[in-house]
Amino acid sequence: LSKAKSPGTVRRLSLKMKKLPELRRKLSLRNPRPRGPEGQEGQEGGPTSPGGPKESTNVISRYHLDTSVTTRAGPPRAKDLSRGGYLSDGDSPEVLLQGGGRGEGEDEEKTLEVGAFQAYSGGEVTPRGHQVISGLVNVHLHGVKELKAPRGEGREVFCVLQVDGENRARTALLPWRTAFVGLNHTFNLELEGAQHLKVMVFSWEATSCRSRLCCHGTVGLAHVFRGCRVQQLAVRLQPRGVLFSKFTLVEQWDKAGEREPRVFGVELGHLVEREKTPSKVPLLIQKCLAEIEKRGLKVVGLYRLCGSAAVKKDLRDAFERDSAAVTLSEQLYPDINVITGILKDYLRELPTPLITSTLYHVVLEAMAKRAPRATPGEGNAVALLGCLPDVEKATLTRLLDHLSLVASYHLFNRMTPQNLAVCFGPVLLTQSQDP
Image (cartoon, rainbow, N blue to C red):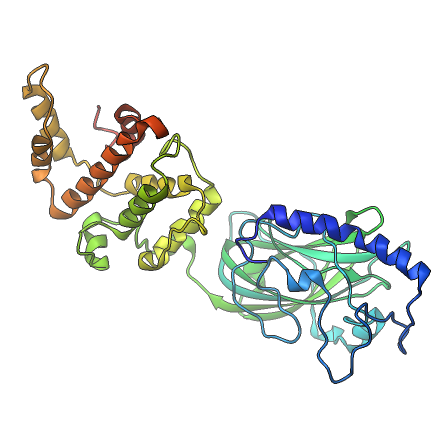
């Protein structure tokens, strides 16, 4: 599924899939399938020629929400994992297993060179707040051994990967017939200031549609890659079990705290000079205002509501990487409050407020000299901006024009000039400038 696929659609698909095991059981009672030469059931689509391609019936493999999961036939792809946290329908994965697709546990355990894996107990995990790592990490899960034998037939397992408590990836459902379960899954994780990677093994009962935590283990990422970019570990799981895995640091990036900001917190003049925009207005402000005017002028409570913090962080990182490449389409960012929130965050973090101290005092003097019942004209207001540098003048002029347009739709969005002043006063003024 693509990122644009909603979790509701995934949930409906999963509910339909939950009925399949019972249907398969009934069909098998009516018409038992012939078993293959290796004692495995034939595939639902009929026999496949030895030389022909085998089309996977594994729904999780074909429609996995983590786009970095790779099959054996293809190389790993360095794509970001599901940021929204959608892992199928959360805790109820369902899958049609392809007969003979993964092999029996005994055979896979024999082919695994256990001696090549370094024992890892998890005691090396660093305390929270200490060593972190940022970069692209490739994780290959070979298999798990010493699992408690399953109590009944038809039991399956799956693994979930967490990074600092956040779900990042999940395997497909795998058959659990012996004490060793072959996994053979590869994930590419983009990490930023990460400390711990936790692997949790769950059992799945199709009859009751429930999952149960069997065992878990934690790896200290910074410690694992100390002095070596590739590690094969036999991670001790709790309360029992050993996970055979391979960790590869593909790319290492600077720590987030050490990166020099490129957009947020940068002087307005320096940013415009680097972006070389003809209008002398930063690209972030240009793009945000244009998108808000395109589809947000009639949104009730515009600039008052807060968007998703996680989505705002993603958009902020995108602007930091390359403002020119950012696209604020409704398909990518359907919530207009995310865009208004990013705009206010940018203005709030300017080293020098957009309404400078000089302009603030000029406005106060003009207001003091104005007649009690006189209304300020547009020409007088524009003349007050003459004390600003060119970049600040162009940016503030564009912003004020936008706010005037927003206020003209107050019958729809309920944002009168007074309400807009409440939202933008703390953003455009310093704390020392009393209104």
